[in-house]
Length: 99
Image 1 (tube, rainbow, N blue to C red):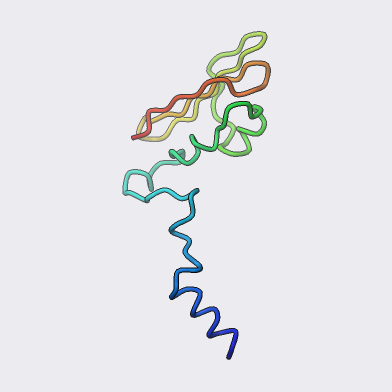
Image 2: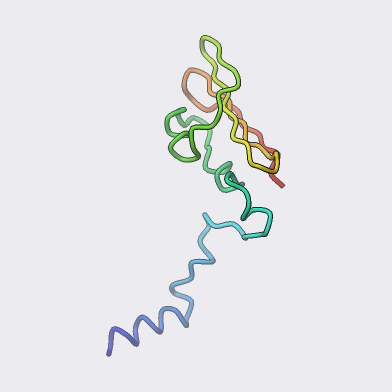
């Protein structure tokens, strides 16, 4: 009984508040239909490897490759995109059309 009261207290007092976690974004009708979101974009931090990015987001589509550079794009069904540039296997640039 004491454990149940403690758990109930945690929920009612806000100690267990998943909505306040910094890695969660507000859910909108548009973001629910998107496979790739601003959360994915924000997780792509400068310096991570291509493998790490593919683990965090997904494989994506390779749109450009040179000796030292790879450009990967993730595209949603609504046409919005996340594009990341990797130089010498490290993320050096990123952009998005997510709004």
